[in-house]
Image (cartoon, rainbow, N blue to C red):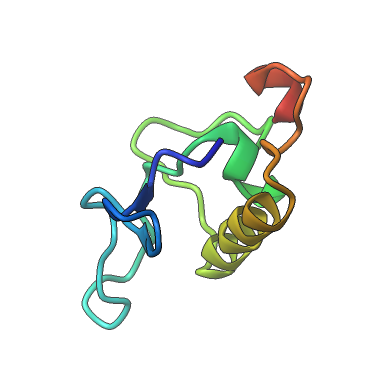
Length: 92
């Protein structure tokens, strides 16, 4: 079981991490993307019970990407899905 953005080469010897077009250069943009990802791999600060005003965006840093990458590494080491046995909502 692997995250959808982890791809194996045909000979199954190399793993490639992809972003499906959501990545940007940090120096070019001021804010992180609003498209935050999948619950099982998302950093806790991306979950919020605060209601945003129309047009308002959540503020977070690239540390959320470090958290997600850590979950991916854990997944690769254990060969288990993050928060296995929980629904996506429970994982959130």
